[in-house]
Structure formats: structure tokens, C-alpha cells
Image (cartoon, rainbow, N blue to C red; front, side, top):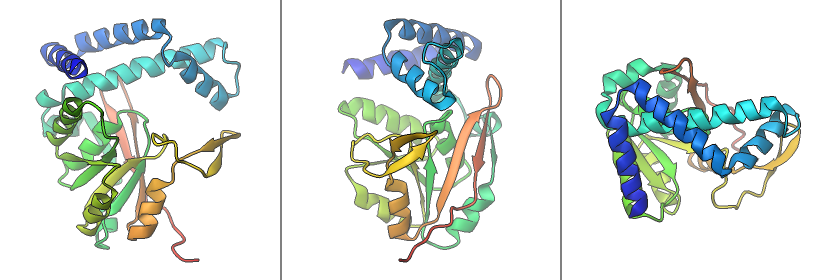
Length: 248
């Protein structure tokens, strides 16, 4: 219950304040969070591996700070959903490559979007939804049902629907209906990823769920990512489908 109340309080603050003020509050909150040390070492360690720099390097600290601040601003964007119209969302997120989705859906087997927790990924899916596409996002089952409903309703306000990883058959049903399923593939919440990949020179175990779903369903696998292009606006790219070897 506390988690749900906390989100509702944050939503009230986000809705009640203009963007510059809300972003200021988000930045302040992100800096306070960093002072607690929670997740800070993990973020710095990841950035240091990507850049091949010592974890105590000033550049690592600077980038880690920006990650926390941008994440907080992304949360603000999500919390402001109830007061952001579909037309306003279209203005805030420039999108390129929707023709790749159109071509993919002509096959009648839906489409699997492979994405990552980069930029405002929630807005990325919502941006596709407001164009009239039927799109679902694969999500964890939250322990707090009220929090889960909170996220569902915020997404649904822009036409973005939620599927859960404990109901995988529903994923294939949506694809059979020629709809779109978006799957973040940079995080393994179940701890079941077993295939190693070379990632920035290091061995990493990444989930292959999006790939396996595309192979089993026959749906095209389409990369799509979103990132900030300036303080308040974003850019999203929808790429051509990845060529998959479906036999052998």
C-alpha cells in the first residue's frame, strides 16, 4: 500500500507543477538518491566497463550522475501521462521508421519489438500506440497489485497495454492477432539467461526471450530505441527487421 500511495503522491506533484519545476524536483531527488549509495556502485561499475576506465575516474562519476538525473526525469514524464494528450506526445517524441512496422504487419504474424531500458522506453511504446498500432509491453508481475494497476492505467491512457511474463501464451495470442509486442532485452529479471555474449569486451548473459518468441511465432523482430534529443523532447527510431535464420 505504501508503494502505491508513494506513486500517487509523486503523480500529484508531477501533475500540479510545470515542467521546469518538476524537472528541478526530479534532479534534486536524484542527487539525494545518489547520496544514499543505493545502486550507485552498480551504475558506476557498468559505465566503467563500457568506457574501460577506472571506476573512480571523474568521467565515470559525471556520467553516473547524468544517468540518475535522466532516469528521474523519465519518471516525471511517465507520471505526467494523465495531462499529456496524444497530440502533445506526438510533438514531444519525434519518430522515424514506422514504415518498417507497417511492412512487418503485412505478413499477418504481428511484430516483436526488441528494445532496452534506454531513454524513456515507456514513452517509446506509447508513441507507437498513439499512431493507432495495437502494442503490448512485456512486464514483470509486481508484488503490489495496486502499483501494477497504476502502471497499467498510465500506459493504457495512451493505448499501450501490458502483458506479464507469467502469461506467455498471451504473447503468442497477440502476435496471432497481428499485434505488436515490445520486449526489453537488456535485463534478465528471472535470472534464467544462460547464453553468453561478448558485450564491450566482457562476457554477459542476456535474455533471448524476444528472439525465441520471434522465431517460434514467425513474427519479424524489429529493433526500436528512444533517447533525449534536448531537455524536453525525444527521438525514437524504428529499424528494419533483423534477418533471422528460421531453419536449421
